[in-house]
Length: 170
Image (cartoon, rainbow, N blue to C red):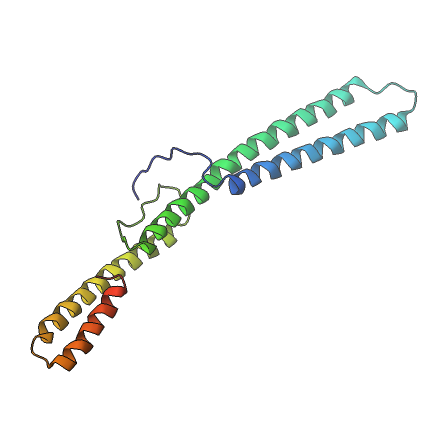
């Protein structure tokens, strides 16, 4: 697989950011849970003063959870990029193939996911190239054979050639 620089970090914005939202949601949920724990502890203690160590531990946990969630969310976006970027290149290749351009095999970056799909698309492109060559040879042969046929048979061959060309192979 060749090295292809990726200029765009968010190739599939909704897919990639869903992981960031998930981690931030988990982090905020844990912070809310910590706040509820703090409020329950204050209520249970009543008028007594809460130990400052417990307060620091709760605040430290909240900060850790928030930082950990942001870090994991960012890491998730980067890992999702390995899927979304590969899917983006595969979609572009398939779009070109649908337009009739077989092009080069899909080259993904080292570490990208979907490499097996890219390899299969490369094999499909090669098979389509071979099929295209075969169809071109058939059209050439039909065109050569047409000259020796009767007029009524020439019309049939002409229709076969038109039908074959309409497939987009030639």
